[in-house]
Image (cartoon, rainbow, N blue to C red; front, side, top):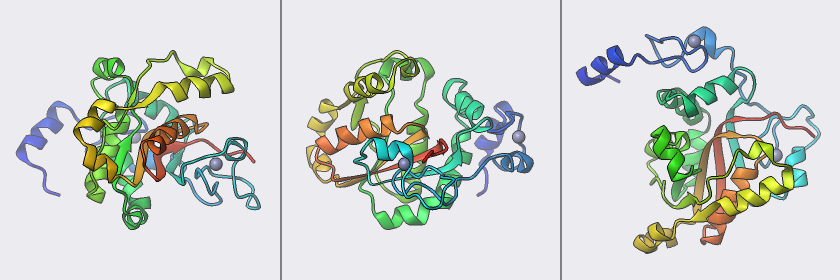
Length: 246
Ligand SMILES: [Zn+2]
Ligand SMILES: [Zn+2]
């Protein structure tokens, strides 16, 4: 695509940075040698959440066996590891919004056709608390979801669900307590629903989008909320996913 003069000037002021090494990229979205350091998610993978598995004989990862899932299917492009961890940290906390272009281009390349066939009614980002959003200036999941919505030509719903409680870092909590906190943290956005009744009622199948999938607790909590709102099927897309253990 031709760059506009405005974009060229922006590139000079805010040069695009590589999502792996964070140095400036002058050509493309990532350095070729840096992209080779990423581990793509391949088969065998958990049939539910999409986590890569080491054992070809098993169908589901340990997390999906231990916790029943009510979303239909998960999709991820890269393994969450020592290469992608700092990249996602910078994406989330250091204003590296430009990583959106690389990450969504790879998501669309791998799953675009499949997602088109699924005919989603809406794309829904995992929300962050409004205070957090105001402080950071953006929600990375919303940036990803926005690009996916554009590519699939499906409406984006950034306000369908909200993060009601600004929870303390959940990493400090144990499994059961974490799940309980999360379940309470997400809620339907009743104000948005009141203003978009018809549209919300027509939402049957949605694609939930986040940057990372680890235990699946966040995706499950958001799925619970969406199903309670009358959505009948939720699929989950993310950039990175943890390694599955059988
Ligand atoms: Zn690089
Ligand atoms: Zn799984």
